[in-house]
Image (cartoon, rainbow, N blue to C red; front, side, top):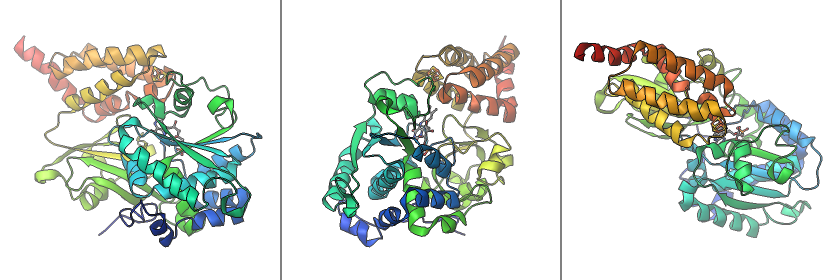
Length: 421
Ligand SMILES: Cc1cc2nc3c(=O)[nH]c(=O)nc-3n(C[C@H](O)[C@H](O)[C@H](O)COP(=O)(O)O)c2cc1C
Ligand code: SF4
Protein backbone atom coordinates (compact mmCIF):
# COMPACT_ATOMS: atom_id res chain seq x y z
CA UNK A 1 0.00 0.00 0.00
CA UNK A 2 1.39 3.41 -0.93
CA UNK A 3 1.40 5.52 2.21
CA UNK A 4 2.85 8.60 0.54
CA UNK A 5 0.80 11.59 -0.56
CA UNK A 6 1.43 14.28 -3.09
CA UNK A 7 0.48 17.78 -2.01
CA UNK A 8 3.59 19.75 -1.13
CA UNK A 9 5.63 17.38 -3.31
CA UNK A 10 3.05 17.39 -6.11
CA UNK A 11 5.38 19.00 -8.65
CA UNK A 12 8.57 17.07 -7.85
CA UNK A 13 10.24 15.99 -11.10
CA UNK A 14 7.09 17.04 -13.02
CA UNK A 15 8.56 20.12 -14.68
CA UNK A 16 11.75 21.74 -15.81
CA UNK A 17 12.57 24.54 -13.38
CA UNK A 18 14.20 26.49 -16.22
CA UNK A 19 10.66 27.04 -17.53
CA UNK A 20 8.31 29.13 -15.41
CA UNK A 21 5.60 28.42 -18.01
CA UNK A 22 5.73 24.76 -17.08
CA UNK A 23 5.21 25.73 -13.44
CA UNK A 24 2.28 27.94 -14.48
CA UNK A 25 0.74 25.03 -16.42
CA UNK A 26 0.70 23.05 -13.15
CA UNK A 27 -1.35 25.74 -11.40
CA UNK A 28 1.66 27.80 -10.38
CA UNK A 29 1.05 31.25 -8.85
CA UNK A 30 -2.71 30.55 -8.50
CA UNK A 31 -2.18 30.52 -4.73
CA UNK A 32 -0.63 34.00 -5.01
CA UNK A 33 -3.64 35.35 -6.91
CA UNK A 34 -5.85 33.90 -4.17
CA UNK A 35 -3.64 35.47 -1.50
CA UNK A 36 -4.16 38.94 -2.97
CA UNK A 37 -7.94 38.34 -2.90
CA UNK A 38 -7.89 37.01 0.66
CA UNK A 39 -5.59 39.66 2.16
CA UNK A 40 -3.59 39.09 5.39
CA UNK A 41 -6.57 38.11 7.57
CA UNK A 42 -7.93 35.67 5.00
CA UNK A 43 -4.49 34.08 4.54
CA UNK A 44 -4.11 33.63 8.31
CA UNK A 45 -7.61 32.08 8.49
CA UNK A 46 -6.63 29.53 5.84
CA UNK A 47 -3.44 28.68 7.74
CA UNK A 48 -5.34 28.30 11.01
CA UNK A 49 -7.87 26.05 9.25
CA UNK A 50 -5.05 23.89 7.88
CA UNK A 51 -3.40 23.29 11.28
CA UNK A 52 0.03 23.90 9.72
CA UNK A 53 2.93 24.01 12.17
CA UNK A 54 6.41 25.27 11.36
CA UNK A 55 8.51 22.63 9.65
CA UNK A 56 11.89 24.03 10.75
CA UNK A 57 11.84 21.91 13.91
CA UNK A 58 10.02 23.84 16.62
CA UNK A 59 6.53 23.08 15.20
CA UNK A 60 5.01 26.40 16.27
CA UNK A 61 1.58 26.94 14.61
CA UNK A 62 2.22 29.00 11.48
CA UNK A 63 -1.18 30.74 11.47
CA UNK A 64 -0.59 31.94 15.04
CA UNK A 65 2.99 33.03 14.26
CA UNK A 66 1.86 35.02 11.20
CA UNK A 67 -1.11 36.50 13.07
CA UNK A 68 1.20 37.76 15.84
CA UNK A 69 3.72 39.02 13.27
CA UNK A 70 1.10 40.78 11.17
CA UNK A 71 0.30 43.05 14.13
CA UNK A 72 3.90 44.35 14.32
CA UNK A 73 4.10 47.89 12.90
CA UNK A 74 6.91 49.09 10.64
CA UNK A 75 7.63 50.67 7.26
CA UNK A 76 10.52 48.40 6.39
CA UNK A 77 9.99 44.72 7.07
CA UNK A 78 11.81 41.57 6.04
CA UNK A 79 10.93 38.00 5.07
CA UNK A 80 13.58 35.31 5.50
CA UNK A 81 13.33 31.83 4.10
CA UNK A 82 15.55 29.54 6.16
CA UNK A 83 17.19 27.14 3.71
CA UNK A 84 20.21 26.39 5.89
CA UNK A 85 19.23 22.74 6.33
CA UNK A 86 22.34 21.82 8.30
CA UNK A 87 20.74 19.02 10.32
CA UNK A 88 22.51 15.77 9.43
CA UNK A 89 20.32 13.26 7.55
CA UNK A 90 17.98 16.03 6.44
CA UNK A 91 17.56 16.91 2.79
CA UNK A 92 13.84 17.52 2.23
CA UNK A 93 14.29 21.30 1.78
CA UNK A 94 16.87 20.57 -0.90
CA UNK A 95 14.22 18.65 -2.85
CA UNK A 96 11.95 21.70 -2.74
CA UNK A 97 14.71 24.04 -3.88
CA UNK A 98 15.80 21.62 -6.57
CA UNK A 99 12.44 20.47 -7.93
CA UNK A 100 9.95 23.21 -7.07
CA UNK A 101 11.68 26.54 -6.35
CA UNK A 102 8.70 28.62 -7.55
CA UNK A 103 6.50 27.08 -4.87
CA UNK A 104 8.95 28.41 -2.27
CA UNK A 105 9.07 31.82 -4.00
CA UNK A 106 5.26 31.89 -4.06
CA UNK A 107 5.16 31.07 -0.33
CA UNK A 108 7.62 33.89 0.38
CA UNK A 109 5.45 36.39 -1.52
CA UNK A 110 2.35 35.22 0.38
CA UNK A 111 4.30 35.70 3.63
CA UNK A 112 5.26 39.19 2.45
CA UNK A 113 1.63 40.12 1.74
CA UNK A 114 0.64 38.91 5.23
CA UNK A 115 3.52 40.69 6.97
CA UNK A 116 3.46 43.70 4.65
CA UNK A 117 7.14 43.27 3.83
CA UNK A 118 8.93 44.43 0.71
CA UNK A 119 12.31 42.72 1.20
CA UNK A 120 12.93 39.01 1.10
CA UNK A 121 16.03 36.86 1.60
CA UNK A 122 16.56 33.18 1.17
CA UNK A 123 19.48 31.92 3.25
CA UNK A 124 20.77 28.85 1.43
CA UNK A 125 23.54 26.80 2.94
CA UNK A 126 26.94 26.98 1.29
CA UNK A 127 26.90 23.23 0.60
CA UNK A 128 23.93 23.79 -1.75
CA UNK A 129 26.02 26.16 -3.86
CA UNK A 130 24.94 24.42 -7.05
CA UNK A 131 21.38 25.52 -6.25
CA UNK A 132 22.15 29.19 -5.64
CA UNK A 133 22.22 30.17 -9.31
CA UNK A 134 19.24 27.96 -10.13
CA UNK A 135 17.25 29.76 -7.45
CA UNK A 136 18.46 33.16 -8.68
CA UNK A 137 17.26 32.20 -12.15
CA UNK A 138 13.82 31.23 -10.77
CA UNK A 139 13.66 34.64 -9.05
CA UNK A 140 14.59 36.36 -12.32
CA UNK A 141 11.95 34.46 -14.32
CA UNK A 142 9.33 35.23 -11.67
CA UNK A 143 10.24 38.90 -11.94
CA UNK A 144 9.91 38.88 -15.73
CA UNK A 145 6.37 37.48 -15.36
CA UNK A 146 5.41 40.19 -12.85
CA UNK A 147 5.26 37.93 -9.77
CA UNK A 148 8.18 39.71 -8.10
CA UNK A 149 9.43 43.29 -8.22
CA UNK A 150 7.22 46.36 -8.38
CA UNK A 151 3.43 46.43 -8.51
CA UNK A 152 3.09 42.63 -8.41
CA UNK A 153 0.16 41.47 -10.57
CA UNK A 154 -1.03 45.11 -10.61
CA UNK A 155 -1.87 44.99 -6.92
CA UNK A 156 0.35 47.94 -5.99
CA UNK A 157 2.54 45.63 -3.90
CA UNK A 158 6.35 45.48 -4.19
CA UNK A 159 8.51 42.58 -3.10
CA UNK A 160 11.87 41.21 -4.14
CA UNK A 161 14.05 38.30 -3.05
CA UNK A 162 17.83 38.07 -2.68
CA UNK A 163 19.78 34.84 -2.32
CA UNK A 164 22.15 34.85 0.66
CA UNK A 165 24.75 32.14 1.07
CA UNK A 166 25.41 30.61 4.47
CA UNK A 167 28.96 29.58 5.29
CA UNK A 168 28.24 26.05 6.45
CA UNK A 169 27.67 26.29 10.20
CA UNK A 170 24.85 24.17 11.64
CA UNK A 171 24.04 26.75 14.34
CA UNK A 172 23.30 29.33 11.63
CA UNK A 173 20.03 27.48 10.99
CA UNK A 174 18.88 28.87 14.34
CA UNK A 175 17.04 31.97 13.24
CA UNK A 176 18.85 34.56 15.40
CA UNK A 177 22.30 33.10 14.58
CA UNK A 178 21.26 33.15 10.93
CA UNK A 179 20.40 36.84 11.23
CA UNK A 180 23.69 37.63 13.00
CA UNK A 181 25.60 35.95 10.18
CA UNK A 182 23.60 37.89 7.57
CA UNK A 183 24.65 41.06 9.36
CA UNK A 184 28.28 40.05 8.91
CA UNK A 185 28.85 38.99 12.51
CA UNK A 186 29.93 35.57 13.65
CA UNK A 187 26.98 33.21 13.56
CA UNK A 188 25.99 32.88 17.19
CA UNK A 189 22.45 32.95 18.63
CA UNK A 190 21.16 36.18 20.10
CA UNK A 191 19.77 36.74 23.55
CA UNK A 192 16.07 36.91 22.71
CA UNK A 193 15.07 40.16 24.37
CA UNK A 194 12.67 40.82 21.52
CA UNK A 195 10.81 38.63 19.11
CA UNK A 196 12.42 38.37 15.68
CA UNK A 197 9.13 39.56 14.24
CA UNK A 198 9.72 42.83 16.13
CA UNK A 199 13.51 43.17 15.89
CA UNK A 200 15.22 40.82 13.50
CA UNK A 201 17.57 41.56 10.64
CA UNK A 202 19.19 44.98 11.29
CA UNK A 203 16.62 45.36 14.10
CA UNK A 204 13.85 45.44 11.48
CA UNK A 205 10.62 43.44 11.90
CA UNK A 206 11.46 40.06 10.38
CA UNK A 207 9.38 37.00 9.64
CA UNK A 208 11.52 33.88 9.25
CA UNK A 209 10.20 30.54 8.12
CA UNK A 210 11.49 27.21 6.95
CA UNK A 211 11.47 26.26 3.24
CA UNK A 212 8.91 23.49 3.69
CA UNK A 213 6.64 25.72 5.78
CA UNK A 214 6.58 28.31 2.98
CA UNK A 215 5.99 25.68 0.30
CA UNK A 216 3.17 24.25 2.43
CA UNK A 217 1.60 27.73 2.63
CA UNK A 218 1.45 27.82 -1.19
CA UNK A 219 -0.14 24.35 -1.30
CA UNK A 220 -2.62 25.27 1.44
CA UNK A 221 -3.82 28.38 -0.34
CA UNK A 222 -4.06 26.39 -3.54
CA UNK A 223 -6.05 23.46 -2.09
CA UNK A 224 -7.73 25.28 0.80
CA UNK A 225 -6.84 25.11 4.49
CA UNK A 226 -9.73 22.79 5.46
CA UNK A 227 -8.89 20.38 2.67
CA UNK A 228 -5.19 20.19 3.64
CA UNK A 229 -6.14 19.80 7.31
CA UNK A 230 -8.13 16.66 6.49
CA UNK A 231 -4.86 14.76 6.20
CA UNK A 232 -3.12 13.63 9.34
CA UNK A 233 -4.40 13.12 12.87
CA UNK A 234 -6.71 15.44 14.87
CA UNK A 235 -3.80 17.34 16.45
CA UNK A 236 -1.07 16.80 13.84
CA UNK A 237 -2.88 17.87 10.76
CA UNK A 238 -1.64 17.79 7.22
CA UNK A 239 1.41 16.20 5.70
CA UNK A 240 5.16 16.17 6.27
CA UNK A 241 8.15 15.81 4.01
CA UNK A 242 10.51 13.27 5.51
CA UNK A 243 14.15 12.54 4.61
CA UNK A 244 14.46 8.77 4.75
CA UNK A 245 18.05 7.56 4.74
CA UNK A 246 20.58 5.10 6.09
CA UNK A 247 20.40 1.29 5.71
CA UNK A 248 17.08 1.31 3.91
CA UNK A 249 16.32 0.00 0.44
CA UNK A 250 14.61 3.11 -0.94
CA UNK A 251 16.07 6.25 0.62
CA UNK A 252 14.68 9.60 -0.47
CA UNK A 253 12.43 12.53 0.41
CA UNK A 254 8.80 11.43 0.77
CA UNK A 255 5.61 13.21 1.71
CA UNK A 256 3.54 11.36 4.29
CA UNK A 257 0.30 12.17 6.09
CA UNK A 258 0.84 12.53 9.85
CA UNK A 259 -0.34 9.33 11.53
CA UNK A 260 1.50 6.86 9.30
CA UNK A 261 3.40 4.43 11.55
CA UNK A 262 7.19 4.25 11.79
CA UNK A 263 6.91 0.66 10.56
CA UNK A 264 5.10 1.83 7.41
CA UNK A 265 7.80 4.43 6.82
CA UNK A 266 10.63 1.92 7.07
CA UNK A 267 9.08 -1.13 5.44
CA UNK A 268 6.35 0.11 3.05
CA UNK A 269 7.83 3.42 1.92
CA UNK A 270 11.50 2.59 2.42
CA UNK A 271 11.21 -1.01 1.21
CA UNK A 272 12.75 -2.45 4.38
CA UNK A 273 16.33 -2.84 5.52
CA UNK A 274 19.09 -3.36 2.97
CA UNK A 275 20.24 -6.92 2.35
CA UNK A 276 17.38 -8.26 4.49
CA UNK A 277 19.17 -7.35 7.70
CA UNK A 278 17.38 -6.62 10.97
CA UNK A 279 16.63 -3.11 12.17
CA UNK A 280 18.78 -1.96 15.07
CA UNK A 281 17.33 1.53 15.63
CA UNK A 282 15.98 4.67 14.01
CA UNK A 283 17.07 8.21 14.67
CA UNK A 284 14.27 10.70 14.16
CA UNK A 285 14.82 14.40 13.50
CA UNK A 286 18.50 14.36 12.64
CA UNK A 287 21.58 14.36 14.87
CA UNK A 288 19.65 16.30 17.51
CA UNK A 289 16.91 13.67 17.61
CA UNK A 290 16.17 10.60 19.69
CA UNK A 291 17.24 7.01 19.07
CA UNK A 292 14.15 4.83 18.65
CA UNK A 293 14.30 1.06 19.21
CA UNK A 294 12.37 -1.45 17.02
CA UNK A 295 9.88 -2.02 19.87
CA UNK A 296 8.43 1.44 19.13
CA UNK A 297 7.91 0.87 15.39
CA UNK A 298 4.14 0.90 15.70
CA UNK A 299 4.11 4.46 17.01
CA UNK A 300 2.33 6.91 14.75
CA UNK A 301 4.48 9.55 13.11
CA UNK A 302 2.77 12.58 14.64
CA UNK A 303 3.66 15.24 17.19
CA UNK A 304 1.53 13.88 20.04
CA UNK A 305 2.23 10.13 19.89
CA UNK A 306 5.99 10.59 19.46
CA UNK A 307 6.00 13.53 21.87
CA UNK A 308 4.48 11.33 24.59
CA UNK A 309 7.57 9.13 24.31
CA UNK A 310 9.93 12.12 24.38
CA UNK A 311 10.62 11.92 20.65
CA UNK A 312 10.55 14.99 18.41
CA UNK A 313 9.78 15.01 14.69
CA UNK A 314 12.26 17.89 14.33
CA UNK A 315 13.45 18.41 10.79
CA UNK A 316 11.71 15.25 9.53
CA UNK A 317 14.80 13.08 9.15
CA UNK A 318 14.29 9.33 9.56
CA UNK A 319 17.65 7.60 9.71
CA UNK A 320 17.61 3.81 9.63
CA UNK A 321 20.44 1.77 11.20
CA UNK A 322 20.70 -1.97 10.73
CA UNK A 323 21.91 -4.64 13.14
CA UNK A 324 25.56 -4.21 12.15
CA UNK A 325 25.73 -0.75 13.71
CA UNK A 326 27.09 -0.42 17.21
CA UNK A 327 25.17 2.18 19.18
CA UNK A 328 28.30 3.65 20.80
CA UNK A 329 30.00 4.10 17.42
CA UNK A 330 26.96 5.85 16.05
CA UNK A 331 26.78 8.12 19.09
CA UNK A 332 30.44 8.94 18.65
CA UNK A 333 29.78 10.27 15.13
CA UNK A 334 26.83 12.32 16.45
CA UNK A 335 29.00 13.61 19.27
CA UNK A 336 31.86 14.55 16.92
CA UNK A 337 29.35 16.58 14.93
CA UNK A 338 28.19 18.56 17.96
CA UNK A 339 31.70 19.09 19.24
CA UNK A 340 32.59 20.55 15.86
CA UNK A 341 29.42 22.65 15.53
CA UNK A 342 29.15 24.09 19.05
CA UNK A 343 29.68 27.83 18.56
CA UNK A 344 31.38 28.15 21.95
CA UNK A 345 29.22 31.00 23.24
CA UNK A 346 27.99 29.21 26.35
CA UNK A 347 29.81 26.94 28.80
CA UNK A 348 27.35 24.02 29.10
CA UNK A 349 27.49 23.32 25.37
CA UNK A 350 31.14 24.23 24.75
CA UNK A 351 32.54 22.27 27.68
CA UNK A 352 29.78 19.68 27.88
CA UNK A 353 30.34 18.52 24.32
CA UNK A 354 34.08 18.37 24.89
CA UNK A 355 33.83 16.28 28.06
CA UNK A 356 31.12 13.97 26.73
CA UNK A 357 33.22 13.31 23.63
CA UNK A 358 36.19 12.30 25.78
CA UNK A 359 34.08 9.93 27.87
CA UNK A 360 32.24 8.48 24.88
CA UNK A 361 35.58 7.70 23.28
CA UNK A 362 36.30 5.46 26.26
CA UNK A 363 33.11 3.49 25.60
CA UNK A 364 34.03 3.13 21.94
CA UNK A 365 37.37 1.56 22.86
CA UNK A 366 35.90 -0.58 25.63
CA UNK A 367 37.39 1.47 28.46
CA UNK A 368 34.19 2.95 29.90
CA UNK A 369 33.18 2.66 33.53
CA UNK A 370 29.93 2.78 35.49
CA UNK A 371 31.10 6.11 36.87
CA UNK A 372 31.58 7.37 33.29
CA UNK A 373 28.01 6.44 32.43
CA UNK A 374 26.69 8.40 35.39
CA UNK A 375 28.89 11.36 34.47
CA UNK A 376 27.75 11.57 30.85
CA UNK A 377 24.12 11.38 31.98
CA UNK A 378 24.74 14.19 34.47
CA UNK A 379 26.55 16.37 31.90
CA UNK A 380 23.86 15.67 29.32
CA UNK A 381 21.15 16.85 31.67
CA UNK A 382 23.08 20.04 32.46
CA UNK A 383 23.40 20.72 28.73
CA UNK A 384 19.74 19.99 28.13
CA UNK A 385 18.58 22.53 30.67
CA UNK A 386 21.37 25.13 30.81
CA UNK A 387 22.54 25.59 27.21
CA UNK A 388 21.92 28.94 25.60
CA UNK A 389 20.30 27.67 22.40
CA UNK A 390 18.66 24.65 20.85
CA UNK A 391 21.94 23.21 19.63
CA UNK A 392 23.29 22.56 23.11
CA UNK A 393 19.87 21.69 24.52
CA UNK A 394 19.34 18.92 21.97
CA UNK A 395 22.93 17.73 21.46
CA UNK A 396 22.61 15.04 24.19
CA UNK A 397 19.16 13.81 23.04
CA UNK A 398 20.54 10.86 21.07
CA UNK A 399 22.87 9.89 23.90
CA UNK A 400 20.20 10.02 26.62
CA UNK A 401 17.69 8.08 24.51
CA UNK A 402 20.34 5.48 23.68
CA UNK A 403 21.18 5.02 27.36
CA UNK A 404 17.44 4.53 27.99
CA UNK A 405 16.82 2.03 25.18
CA UNK A 406 20.20 0.36 24.72
CA UNK A 407 21.88 0.31 28.18
CA UNK A 408 23.43 -3.06 27.40
CA UNK A 409 25.53 -1.52 24.62
CA UNK A 410 27.23 0.70 27.18
CA UNK A 411 27.64 -2.03 29.77
CA UNK A 412 29.25 -4.30 27.19
CA UNK A 413 31.91 -1.65 26.74
CA UNK A 414 32.60 -1.66 30.47
CA UNK A 415 32.76 -5.42 30.82
CA UNK A 416 35.39 -5.74 28.14
CA UNK A 417 37.82 -3.77 30.33
CA UNK A 418 37.13 -6.07 33.29
CA UNK A 419 37.72 -9.15 31.19
CA UNK A 420 41.05 -7.96 29.86
CA UNK A 421 42.40 -6.37 33.08
C1 LIG B 1 20.77 24.57 16.06
C2 LIG B 1 19.54 24.88 15.27
C3 LIG B 1 19.54 24.71 13.89
C4 LIG B 1 18.40 25.01 13.15
N1 LIG B 1 18.44 24.80 11.81
C5 LIG B 1 17.35 25.10 11.06
C6 LIG B 1 17.38 24.95 9.65
O1 LIG B 1 18.38 24.50 9.07
N2 LIG B 1 16.27 25.28 8.96
C7 LIG B 1 15.14 25.77 9.57
O2 LIG B 1 14.17 26.10 8.91
N3 LIG B 1 15.09 25.94 10.90
C8 LIG B 1 16.16 25.62 11.66
N4 LIG B 1 16.12 25.83 13.01
C9 LIG B 1 14.87 26.37 13.60
C10 LIG B 1 14.81 27.89 13.44
O3 LIG B 1 15.47 28.50 14.53
C11 LIG B 1 13.36 28.40 13.40
O4 LIG B 1 12.63 27.86 14.49
C12 LIG B 1 12.62 28.03 12.13
O5 LIG B 1 13.37 28.37 10.98
C13 LIG B 1 11.30 28.78 12.09
O6 LIG B 1 10.59 28.46 10.94
P1 LIG B 1 9.22 27.65 10.98
O7 LIG B 1 8.30 28.37 11.95
O8 LIG B 1 8.73 27.70 9.59
O9 LIG B 1 9.54 26.27 11.46
C14 LIG B 1 17.24 25.51 13.79
C15 LIG B 1 17.23 25.68 15.18
C16 LIG B 1 18.37 25.36 15.92
C17 LIG B 1 18.33 25.54 17.40
S1 SF4 C 1 24.22 26.04 23.05
FE1 SF4 C 1 26.11 25.68 21.87
S2 SF4 C 1 25.66 26.51 19.87
FE2 SF4 C 1 24.14 27.35 21.28
S3 SF4 C 1 25.01 29.28 22.03
FE3 SF4 C 1 25.68 27.71 23.45
S4 SF4 C 1 27.69 27.09 22.65
FE4 SF4 C 1 26.65 28.14 20.99
